[in-house]
Image (tube, rainbow, N blue to C red; front, side):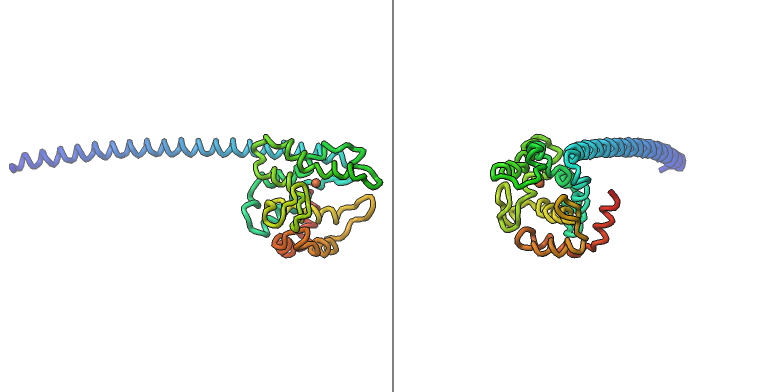
Length: 246
Ligand SMILES: [Fe+2]
């Protein structure tokens, strides 16, 4: 190879190298723009998902408040039970603790009581057998009302099964043990805790310590023993704090 040809080759190689570098830089800038666009799309998607979730929560709370407004005595029962139930789920360490659908189910558990007349729901004397049978239909009425609300997902199982008992003597389906959805087993414990620690027309509220003894006594009959074990790891102060925050 002559020296001139060699110089030309180096010069043309340098030109090609510079061209390649410019192309690479342009490709890099293009990729960075794609990445920035993708990040923006994800961000917008996340914002929309959060907005959607907030509107679901607002809707569920509005419905839950509408149900509760009927009964001056229970006050914020649904919100307390939802808070206690989510605390219990976290103590058990299962994925239901992360599920907004389960929390929706906790909040809406008694929505079926809209199908029970006031004269029966607030009757001060003992209920007749027919009246009691009607009251016991509220989980079925509730799950019928919510049947087509897709975003409630598994929350609807809480509505249907929140009065089942571990020993199979509950209603509406008489489910037993682990055939009862876990969220409904968790709910049953939270519901009993709130009922015992709330004033009722016929008795004053118990302290959380007294309520704990009573709830724990139902382990293996009314309640799932593993849920009660998780409950027993949560101090009374946690439930007091949750109640105070509402
Ligand atoms: Fe109920």
